[in-house]
Image (cartoon, rainbow over all chains, first blue to last red; front, side):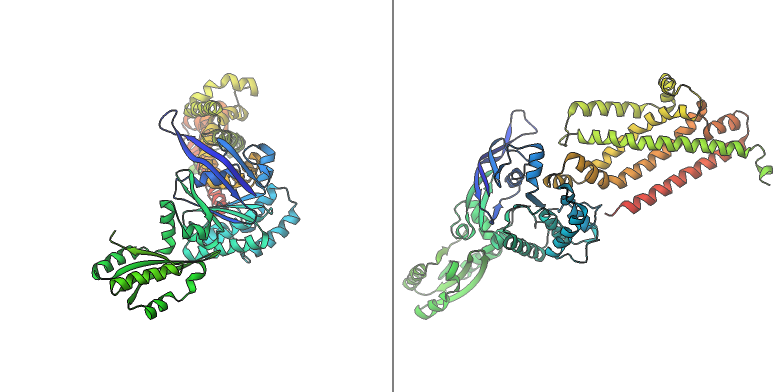
Length: 344
Length: 222
C-alpha cells in the first residue's frame, strides 16, 4: 500500500549558510494493506516530516514515496489534491475548525470533494454513529472534551472513504483512559474498514496496544523495524531498548533493584523475560518445587501486544551457589530470557 | 426650551450634515472592509512559509501599506487632491472625501486583517490541505470564517477612526458634521452647534462600537 525508497529530506539550517539538516535520512519502508504500522521516536527524530511526505505536505529532497499506487512525491496540483482525499490525516491538536459545529466539521472534507448537500448529510450521520458522537452533532469544538474532539477528527478523516489514515501523535494530548478509547476506535476502524493506518508517536504504549509492525526512528534514520513482538523480544538499538522499557519496566524498578542488591548481598536478583505463549506457564511454581531456593518476587509487568504478550518479572533467589546456577540453567531451558542484575 | 438652550441650531442642516457623515462613513467602511481584506489576505498568503510565499509581492504590498498608514490623514487629503479631482471630478462634497478616506483606512485595516489571519492555528490550514482543499477553498472556508471575529472587531475600530476622518475631511470642504462644526460652530463662534455636532458624532461612535461588539461575540464560538 505504501512504499518509501531511499527517502531523504534536507532542511536548510536557519543559522549558517550551506548547512543542511537531514530531517529524514535514507529511509526505506514498506507498509502493507490493512496494517497498523507505528513509527516511534522522540521529538526531532524526523517522524513528523516522514508522515507528512505520505500525503505530500512535505516533499522529499530525494527518493520516492508511493501511496496507493500513486507517486506522491511526483504529483502536483489537482492530481495531488485528489490523491489526498484517499490519504487522510488526524492530528495531535485535532485541528478542528472552531467556527463549525461537529457535523459541519465532518462535512468539510465532503464539501471539498464536491459531494452534494443531501448525500453529505447522510454520510455525516453515518460517521457520527461510527465514532459514537450521537447527540453532539450541533456542538462546537469548544464544548467538547479532548477525546470527543479526536473522534470528530477521526470521523472527518474517514468521510471520503480513504485508503490510508495517517495519525500524527493522535493521542499525545489525551489522558491515558481517553487514549485507550481512541486506540480501540482505531483498531475497530482498521478491522471493519480494512483501512491501512500509519501512526507516529513517542509512546511505546500506543505501539504495544495497536500496532502490527513498528519502525524506530532516531535522528532521521529508521534504526530498527519489524513485527512489534519481535522488536519487544530482541530490541537491538539502544533507543529501542529504552522504548521497550517504557512499557515493560515501571520506572521505579531500577531503584528497587539497587535497594534489593544492597539489602540482600546474598543471592541474586534476576530479570525474567517472557514472550508470547510462555507468559502463562507456571515457572515460579516449578522453581520453588524443584529447587532448594527462596524465591522472592520483586516486581513484574505483563504487556499485551497485537500478536502476543510480553512480560518481565524481577525475582530475588537465594540459596547455595550451585543451586542458583542450576535454577538459571533450568529457566533458560524454558525459553525464558534471564538476566542476572548487578549494580548499575 | 431646546431653542433657548441651543439658539443657533438649525435642525434641518444638522440632520443633513448627519446624513452626509453617515453616508461617507458607510461607503468608506464598506470599501475599506473589502479592500482591506484583499490586501490583508495577500499580505498573509505571500508571507514567509505560506501558501503563496513571494517575497517580492509581500514587500511591495507591505511598503504600500506602511506608507499610506503612516501619512497623517489631513496631509493625505491634500496629497490626494489631484487624484480625487481626476476620479471624482470635484474637491467639494461627500464623494470627494471618499478616495482619501478609503486610501487612508484600507492599509490600516489590511494590517489588522493580516494579524487576524496570523492568529489562525496553522494546524487547521494544514488539516484543510491534507484533505485536498484548493487555496480558494482554504480562503473561503477556513481563513475568513476562522478569523471573522478579528475581522469584525478590526472593522469596528477602523469604522470609528473613519468617523473621525470624515470630520477632518469636512473641514476642507467635504460636508458632514465636521464641516458644520467647523464652519458654523467654530468660525461663527456658535458653541452650541459644535456641541451638538460632537454629541451626534459620539452617538454614532457608540452605536458602531455596540454593533461591532455584539456581532463579534455572536460569531466567536471559541
